[in-house]
Image 1 (cartoon, rainbow, N blue to C red):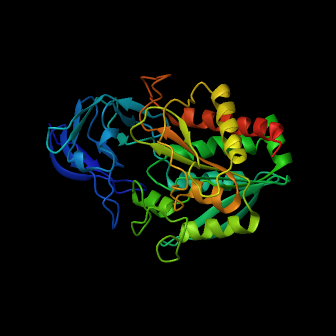
Image 2: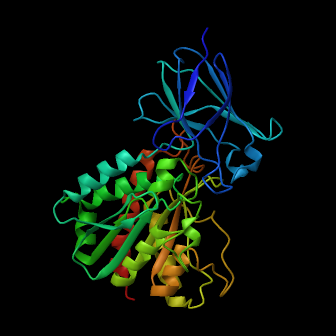
Length: 379
């Protein structure tokens, strides 16, 4: 039989074909441009109908997060709408660390990705649909190094300044699926959570902070290899115009509450990281953060507080990261939401793992928690 064909020459595509023999391919993941980071893959296979594919992605011991490959199943779709999981195994001793994906498509085409992709075309559809809703304003905060617009949606008449922003790390596509769910909630005139938030808050929403990395198929950096979430102390037009534009806009509005939406490669859970360790830490601000986290844990079975990142020591927080910078700069209750690339081990779904659908549901729980947090806030 003929060889399968592997291709990644499309929006957010990323793979290098080393060899193909029949229905077996040996592949590797290119690094982000001007960077050592690599982990995101997205490619399609054709000539696959009814054949068991064996796809081997090699040299993964040197990837950004090798711990992300253990107990991980690759995402797969045949219609690019529903994303399931293909059985995958990782052998650290094979060919520099090899993920072997096995899958038998029903049709001739199948797409594989590290997580369900969120294309720039879908991003533009999201922006257009939300901006057309009553009471929603649009503004372009600036342009990226590749010349793409940095989109911001604004809504609400309240005094509390809320910033929601996502996908500083472009390969963490679950972050923009979360944003889609958040915007569906916030633009629904009948949704009670949206009505409360829009009455009490002025919301500023940046669904994709890193359009260049997204289109290029990067894991973690922008067009010139900059990790945007290490630029918030001193962003520059040359290296990080995205952060510079967003932070300048925040300086004009102020920030009371902020959520930076991400994905984590290794931890099979949803969790939040805070701003412990900032020089201006107060128990009052820390209590606000703890209360929000507690509300979300009560509201969402998909959220937990047992697992997460180590807490920074007093006055040792990294102020180049957005959550710490915003808490220090504005006295904001700021936080980083992390979702898994794998699954929520506490509530697993063997068919899809952590999925776009669950990202969107978690977004509404986060917004409902914010509405309750504002109701109880006495600060």
